[in-house]
Image (cartoon, rainbow, N blue to C red):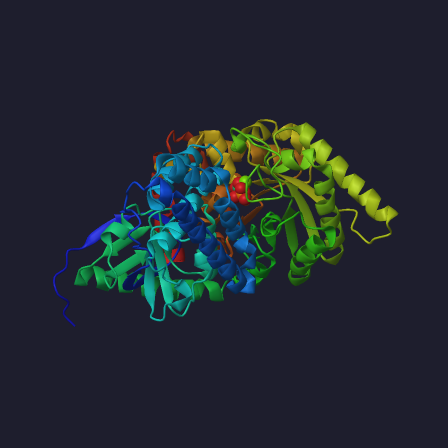
Length: 589
Ligand code: PEP
Ligand code: MG
């Protein structure tokens, strides 16, 4: 087959979900909402215009409600974001100000909405808390929806797409992503979004390649364009040349064959050639995801992010509800450890029922354990549920965002109080449960020797540790190039935590994204991590890497690495020393 000459365009984005797909593009939100009509209205038309706006908002609410009802059960946990969207539709800033603008400035609803969004969006974007900053995208998504209702543009229903395409959208909300039918969508590319967004979490759960943060995607790519999406490298090629297509097909075939081969072997233990064993565990957000961890040969759950059970409902969950969610996972995993992290929310708006805190800088505010210690009743409910579920398997409890010994002591005190209350109520629970902390705040690294005396294990949360240590927002596309797990500061912190823990006789785990990247495995093995936890899809490659390494040979490499003074220098050293092995083990047949 000879293809016509093409003008190949390469767009670089952020890797959202690994894998390669090749196919026809399908632009889902042209919408035309960027070019809205702007005109002044007569005083006598104000009420009509306000009503027109209200109708468009109500229609948007009904649409969201419908999506919520149609969301498949296994993705229901992610549908909480829809509630946020519905709440934002009623938000004074957006709803009230648009109406005020129509009335005071006597302008049409589209113009008023556009004006208000242009004020509100940067307000969210400039917030320092990652969660709130992501709400800027929600503002855009819901205002797009209202705008489309106002101008009567049709919204493409993703669940109706009936040919195998690659979706191109300015943004896909988690709700929309959850509508994706795997038999009709090969992958997707969005202008917005970052690695830590819910959208990429769902894409990884669905195992479809995704590239996010391609600023010009919708402006460059047209429906029916042939495109290549490399979710692993974050590269998108539009109108590829014949040679590029052939190369991509080969890479895709290699990737898939390799994935199948590694997955077939993923039930083998992760033991180095000289007999050192590491446990490779899975991170989950929802109980259903435990199936993937088993499928990919995970040795347990290293991080069960429990906040999703709080975000996907209108009020705080009760003890029995939580107990069932934990019990489900614990029973499936049998005697394999399940590490349940206690509630790690911040003062965010997604908890519609938790609006008692307005913070200037929520990333440095009442996040994680700080929130729970301020709300002992909510914390105790969760701790009781965890202690009850622990009866059914091997459960560890882990506290997030610990920044001092006092917090550990206080949290442990509440854990003991939860036990006492269960005993008093004659409800079965497990008493000797392992207690650990996430090491993700620099002060916890520096005082690791003090904290080690109070806990059974450490789990390094590199997603936040990098954010707080390097002062780099983990979801900000503009500083993504500085967000480097191999920065010497991060390597030194990890080394320090491992050394201190070894001396204190406790284990060190890692559950941040860094643990799941094969390039980091020689370093993590060499620094002495005992357990790595990752997205379930990443487990087979991590295990294969461990099996290919010799722990003694890693030692001189680590000494050499500790002398490097830049992240780039460390990357070069890894490539020089292990590049061939990584390629052969993970990427080649
Ligand atoms: C981390 O911070 O590295 C982590 C694993 O937790 P989360 O990504 O949920 O903040
Ligand atoms: Mg964290």
